[in-house]
Each structure stands twice: as structure tokens, then as C-alpha cells.
Length: 90
Image (cartoon, rainbow, N blue to C red):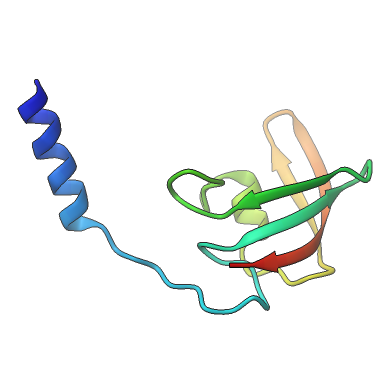
């Protein structure tokens, strides 16, 4: 079983692609984004396929390509909500 897992992980590593997002002007993979929800709570998220908010998630899709000050609408399973992008860094 361990050999099968190792083989699977090696295949994933072989097929992996490093995505560079080299600007803090817009949200992209690798960005650390601070957002403020409708109640004023600040939330900091990292856009990443591994260990953060996926670009395929409702929040990740809504944030991709946004700039500081943009208001985004997030369509989540528990209902829609809005957030304002407060800061973007790498």
C-alpha cells in the first residue's frame, strides 16, 4: 500500500505546474487577501490549491482578478454574502 501511495505522489509531482502570480494589484494564485465581510469582520485567506482557499471554491472564484476596494458577491452553499477586498499581498 505504501508503494502505491509513493507511486501516486510521484506521478502528481511529475505533473505539477508552478503558477506564478507576480503582482499585488489583483488577486491570483499565491495571493494573501484580506477581506471584510458585511458585519465588518476581517478575514485573511491565501489563494492556493493546497493549504488555502482553492481557486475552484466559491470564495476563490469570486476573488480571482479582483482589486483592493472591489466588492465581491460570494455564492456559497449556505447562502450568498458580500465582502470587500481590503488588501492583497504575496
